[in-house]
Length: 267
Image 1 (cartoon, helix red, strand yellow):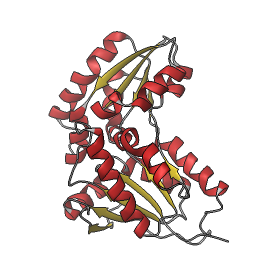
Image 2 (spheres, helix red, strand yellow):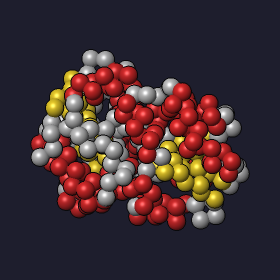
Image 3 (tube, rainbow, N blue to C red):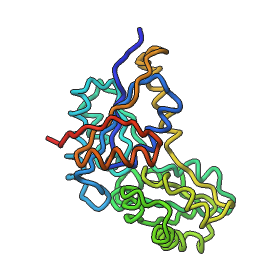
C-alpha cells in the first residue's frame, strides 16, 4: 500500500536544501518536511554534545509530524548524532551522509584530493573512518571553511567578498595539486559556480546530495514506504529562527518562491 506520510529532512540552516532539491528531483511524489535550525546555525564550531542535543530535539519534532523516514541533511549533525539516533529509534529508517571520499579516490588521477568541511565534521569519528577505509594510499588535503557556511546562510553567493573568501580557502588546495574537491558540508553546493571559476574545469567537484537522494529511494523501496504516484504536495518548511529569512533563502537557493515556512522553536 502507498504510504502518504512525509519524509523529514533537517540541517543547521539552509545547507540541507541542497539535499532536499535532489530528493524532490528524484522522488517528486514524496511529501517532504524540512527543518532548519537557524536559531543555532552554524553547527560547525559547536561541540558534539550540543549538536547531538539539537538533533534529538529536531528528530522528536519530525516524528511528531508523522515522518516515515528521516534524512540528516547536515554533515555536522551526522558526525555528532547519526549513530545515537539510530540506536534511539531502531524502527525508524534514518538516512545519513558521510564525506564523499570514496568517489573522489576512485576519480583522482593525481592521487591528491581536497576536502572542504567544518570543524566538528573534521574532528568526528565518521570522517576518520572514511579516510581510513578509502584513502590510505591517497593524499587528502583538508580545509576547514566556516565562513562558507555563513555565505550560504546570508545568501551572499557571488560577491567580491564571497569570491575572496572562496579563494582564501581553496588556494592551498589548488597549490597542492588536487584534482577532486569533496564538499563536506551541505551548504557548499550552493557555491559550486565560484569553486569552478577558481579551480578550473580540471578539478572534479563532488556533491554528495544526489547519492543521498538515491539512498533515500532505496530505503523507501526496501521498507515499502513509497508514496502513491499522484500524491505530490509542496514541501513544508520549519525554522527555529526567523521564518521570513528562511523563506527568502529558499526562493533564492532552490527557486521555491511560494514556500510555506513556519516558526518552530526547539523544545
